[in-house]
Amino acid sequence: MSLGNDRFTLERGIAALPAAVWAAFFDPKARAIWSPPSPDEVFEVLEHDPRDGGTGLHRCGPKSDPTYIVETRYHKLDEPAAVSFTEIVRKGDTPLAASQVSVVFAATEAGTRLTLDVYTTSFVGDGMLAGTKGGWTTSIANLIHHIENAS
Amino acid sequence: MTIEHGNFSVSRTIAASPASVFRAFADEDLKRAWFLNPHLSASDYALDFRVGGGERGRFTMTEGPATGIHENATTYFDIKPDERIVYAYSMSWDGRVHSTSLATVELTSTEAGTRLDYTEAGVFFEGSDGAEMRQGGMEALIDALVATFK
Image (cartoon, rainbow over all chains, first blue to last red; front, top):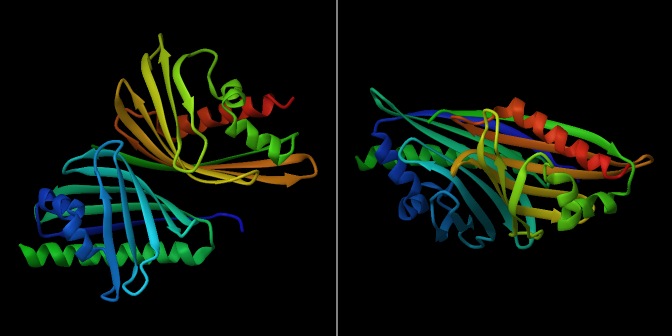
C-alpha cells in the first residue's frame, strides 16, 4: 500500500495564560486526562522527557486493549511559546502513521491562541489520516475544557 | 519564535534496482559517497541504519552567509527494505535547532530501474533556510545519489 499524506491546522482560543496551557499540554497527569478522545479510551505515559532531543513513549487505545504505542521525538521547545516534535504510532510491530507536529501558544488579550499544525503520513490508508485528525481535534477540545475548568 | 511550514516532493528515476538504491541509503560507505558534500568539511558522521537508530553529522562551512557548524540529527521511524524509509530529522546551526522534518523515501520498481519519491514536511524556525532552500538542497543530494549509478 502506498503512503498517504494529510495536513491540518487547528486554531483555538483558550482563557488561560500560555504558561498554564503549556503546563497542561506537557504535564503527564494532565495529558492522561485530556488526551483520550473518549471515556472508553486510555492514555498511559511510559516515558516523558520533553526537551530538545528528548523522547516520549505512551500507550493508548480502548481501556480494554490499549495496544497503540506512540514514540515521540522532541526537536525544539521554546517554553511557553512553541514546540515541534515528530511521532510514530505502532500497533505491535506494525507502523500505522508518522506525524510532524508543531504547536504555537501565542499570548492574546483573552489568554492564549493555540495553533496546532499536523502533517501525517499513513502507512495503512486514509482511515489513519482521518483518525489522527479526529483524535487531535477531540483531544484539544478536552485540553481546553480541562484548563478552563481548572482555572 | 516564528514558525513556517513547508512541504515538498522530489521524484527521480534511477538506473538501478530498488535493492541497489536502498543499499545506498543503508550502507554507511555508500551513503557517504553521495550524502556528504565534497565542498564542506564533514566530521563525526555516523549512520546507524535501523528502526530507532539514527544518523548524525557535523558539517563546517568556512565562508559565505552560512558560515558555521551545521549538524543533522536523524531518527529512523520505519524501514521496509527495498521499498521505503521514514525518518525524522532536525538541522542545527552553531548548536541552535532551526528546522525539523518528517521525510519519506519510497522506491518503486520500474522498467527503467527505480522510481524514487522523496517527500518532506518541514517546520522552519527563525533563521532557517526555509522550505524553498531545503528543497533545492534535497534535489542536489538526490541528484548526487542518482549520479552514483551512472
